[in-house]
Image (cartoon, rainbow, N blue to C red; front, side, top):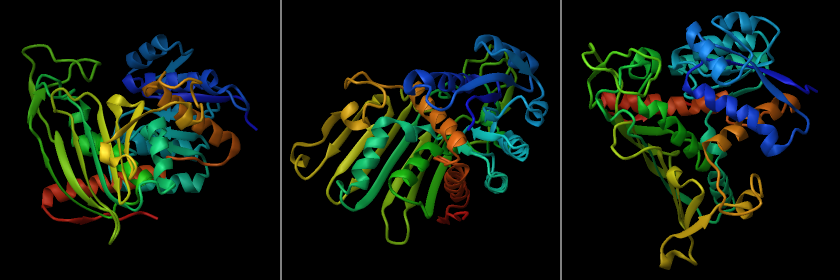
Length: 386
């Protein structure tokens, strides 16, 4: 049994912070028990970014050569926090070297690359996870329990949206997040994958989609600094945007299953992280909004006449996973701590917990089918890779 797992973070951008916090929070939340982990190195192709991340997050070592880290023996596992188009090459090289891998979402820049990652993971037999961490929210876990227990009856409808406004200002620079060759898509893939995965987790597999998408801001200032989200300085050269800013899809679960709608955008003013999920059944409804992530609304035959009942998530719903008192709440960092606990536990026990690369692939297939539908104007079958 491994008693100390050495982890390397590949990519020194803003999301690296969340992974470091998640890893270091595991003992505080869940106890040391049978596994410990340590972030031993951070890498980035930009040496200045790698060095800055190491200093900021108090990591002893940094490198600009991720291949040397993967091919050496100083790490047991890697967390990939780099742009989408390099996920596959890094993950496959790491798994071939026997390293366990947790990869940022979306799994890859394309369905083909995501399928290669799944195949490589199954050949290597290593732990593989994708950071679809919204599954870990205690309110979502409670929703899953209500659905599994049949308290909503037969599920007939799924309604979801992931709405943000960080790119609503046209002066937000044209970073790699606005280039299809690096991303594979805009918000329908980047954050749509979260609510697509929640659809699969809560309801079942999406098998058909029809969609529409728009690019509302067609050019942006060229990216000049390390911060993807801050505004560009004045008198900056403009560059075209070739990913969608917003989109919506109608989805079908199986031949005679539930129907649903999913929206995703990064240009809706006032929406910060509005991840909304509603599940309707023949006997009830549940509603979740990430901006009020420590509660869930439920309607059952006993309460429907009064509207939606508000349930505050606490030990009665999550089994005391975090706090002994209800109403104290959890946030994004706790979802990362749970993700890292599951990753470490899977490495130690050899029993894989989700979301795995295969789950990431399933979400990717739906998102890319929706983007194809938006271009062609036709229904698309989702080709699920078995």
